[in-house]
Amino acid sequence: MVYKGGVDEMIKKTVFAVLCILALLSVNAYAFDDVDSTKWYCDDVEELKERGVIKGYPDNTFRPGNEVTKAEVLTMLLKAADIEVGQTEGNHWASGVLKEAIKRNIVKDVENFNFEDKATRLDVAKYTVRALKLINDSEDKAIFSDTNDSDVLTLYSQGIVRGVLDGNERKYKPNLNINRAEMGVVVLRVVKRKENIMPKGEEIADSEITEDEIEEVAETEEDEIEEVAKTVKNEIEEGAKAEEDVFKLFPVLETSEYDISDISKGVPTKDDIKRLFVYMGKHNLLEKSIMLEDVNFDYVYSDEFKETFTLGFREAYWMYPEYFAFANGTSYKIIDHSDKDAVELVALSKNANFTGEEIKTFRTKFFEKTKNKVNDFIAAGDMTNEMSDTQKAKFLYEWVINNTSNDCSFTPIGYTGYGQITNGLAVCQGYVSTYNLMLKLVGIKAYAVVGQAKVKGKPVEHIWTMAYLDGAKHAIDVTWGDAYDSSTKEVSYKYFKADYETMRKTHTWDEEVFGK
Image (cartoon, rainbow, N blue to C red; front, side, top):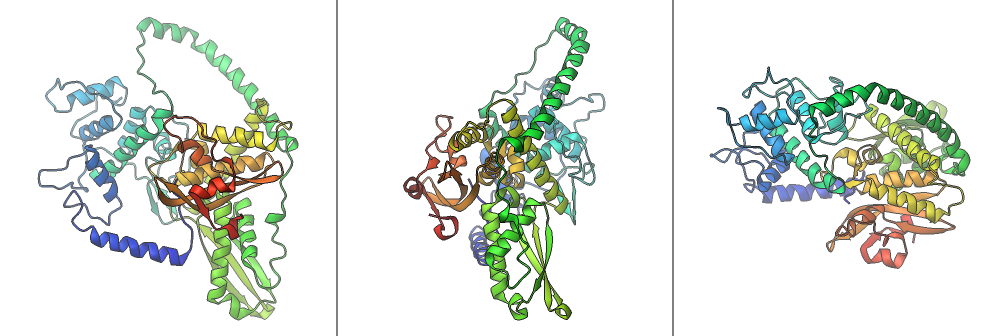
């Protein structure tokens, strides 16, 4: 339930100063002598040691740059995935590990396997997907500029690997040998994935299939494929019909909040900037230019306008996470057109974790997947015009909770609705992004509220929903519906249509911005 902040420069500087102080106070507190506290892998390596997953070397070093052998990779992965390994039977210390990996089809090319070969980043991707039994269902083929390997894409969609940004390109560098720092980070994400996802379902046990059963399956395979093909064809036709009907069944939302035709006259206000960015989000734009006529030239170059611009973006970012979880930063340019007695305002939105193309792709796919999911609800009769707003909101509330696990690794994609709808993994911002978009798709007006909520008595940054249900405004905290009563593993309704008295006991927010 952690919410990533936006663009407030003062907050940024304050946080940076606090982090610097903490860093100074933490000198020599790290478990390994050669793990630099400024490195990206530092916290993950420290946590791995605390968990007992790694031990390091006798001289209290971790040697993060050392390359890792295939034997070491398999040993770490099987341990992280809670796969038990039998006693060593061969001459090599990892022979028991290899035997288990072969049995589970993690290692396939047995003839060419060598314990001491250095493992490439591609090797690790393939071993990890097989060890976790992940399905290669990623639809995004253009994430990395240097590979479209399905196993790499699957791990990216699950938040286990991210690659590196090289200018405007994201690269995985599949043929490079993996080092101990990189492997450590992968292992920790595997451990956390096991902890935070598997309890919601049953882990599939290894199959024990006899030779006779294999022959029987082979004999019926052709008939089954033909039947599946017919089913898929019918589902596609039904889905297309539902796609046509979705906006006929429910009222189209008002579009006035996206109208920016009047911004060109005079000085843009905070609300004008907010509307500009909401327009950009709706149309999946990362850049938008507006000519400002009859404007005070000194003002648009002033710090006062800079603050107005920042506040406008921040409110759009806060209230519309379905758009701006993908693009959580901003800047602008002023281009002088004094010959026309005008200036050109160029508004930009961005995200340090994603390229521009990734932002647009994720946002497009998020909207497509969410809209298709709502179509499924309609086709199944779970969502009808006869339902009240409260009934619709409750159904969607339960669906989001039952199909999402909290992303305790805080991966960048987990802050977005794409992470929720694709991977079932999200922090509060991802929960709210999907929930709010679904509400809007069924004709319910909603926006997000940003503030703080008490977790174990301590306030943390948080985000929740304000929705207009059956003529009245109500607070809905879908994340806390999932996590508030975690001991029962059931949906909690304490924060569904919560009144303000209930909310104020645990939540605080700017009531001038978000309402009372």
